[in-house]
Image (cartoon, rainbow, N blue to C red):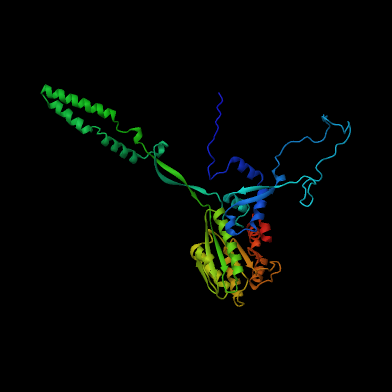
Length: 427
C-alpha cells in the first residue's frame, strides 16, 4: 500500500521555500552580479535591508534537450501561400526590440526579484574572505568538543550515573513508604518469641502484608536510572582579530570621514556575518591614538594634528598585551587622507616593518580623497608613497584610493575577494 503525505503547513518565516532556494542556486551568478551592481549606489544601512534586483530573462531558461538538424514532415492547416520545398522565413526580426523602435522585433523585460535582508547580504559577501590565512586556518566550521550537559533517562550503560540513580531510587522508596527490611526483621523476631496464638496470627498477617508491599515497590526501578548526558561544544578552529585604524585629524574633511566610516561599516558587517569568532579593535588617531568602542569610533567627534605612528604604536601595544601572534591571525585596515608629519614617516615605517607587518596576516590601506576628484588622478601622498615602497619590498599590503561613495563597494570587494596567493601578492 502506497502512502502519500501532503505537507500543507505554512512556510516558516525564517526559511525560504525549496523552490526559492533552487532558483537562487540556479541563477546565483546572475543574481550575485545584480546585487553587486545595485549595492554601489546604496547606503550602508540600505544594504542590510535587502531589496529588488533585476536579472535578464534569458538567464531564466530551463535546461532542456532539443533536436538539432534532420528533416521532418509538417502539416500546416489552412496554408495557401507555400508549397512543398519552400523555405519558411524566420519570424520576429532581430528580437529584443529597442524603446526607440516600437514594433520592431521581440522585446524582453528584465526579471525583478525581491531578496530578503539575509539573502542580499549573503550573496554580496559570498566570495569574500579574510586573505592570506597562512599561519592558522580560520574556518567557518568549528571543531567539536564534549561537555557535560546534565542527565538523561536513556543512554549507554557505560554512562549510568550510580549516585544519581541510587538517590532517586531512595527518594521513590521513601515517598511510597516501602517497608524497611529492619522493620520486617523486628516483627519476625517478635513472632518467634511470641506464644500467644492470637498475637502470632496478627504478626504473621502483618509480616506478609509488609513483604507483599516490598515486592510491589522494587529497590531499583527502571524509572530511577539516570545516564550522564554529554553534548558537543563548538570550539573555534583558530582566532582572528581585525584592527580598524582611522584618521580623524583636522585634515580629514567630513566627506573623507564619511568615506572611511562607510568602509569600516561594511568591514564590520562582513566580519560579523562571515566569521563567528573574530575580535574587532577600533583605534582612531590624530596626533595621538586611543582605543575606543564602536559607538565612539563611528560617531564621536575629534580633531587635531596627524601622527600615523601613534595609531601603529597603539596597535602594537595591544597586540603585545592581548593578542599573541602565535595564537592569533592579525589583520589591520587603515583609512586616512595620506597626510602625515614629515618627521613621522620614518617612525611609522619602522613600526610597520619591524613590529606590525611581521605579526600581521594582511594590512589594507584605504586612502580617501576630496569629493569630485578622480581616485586615479589623486596625487600620491607621503603615506601612500611609504606604503608603496614597503609593498614593493614584499610586505603584505593592499592599497586602494576612493573619492566617492559609489567606489566604496567595489574597492572593498576588490580588497577582500577570494583569490589565489599569486593574485593577492600582485594586488
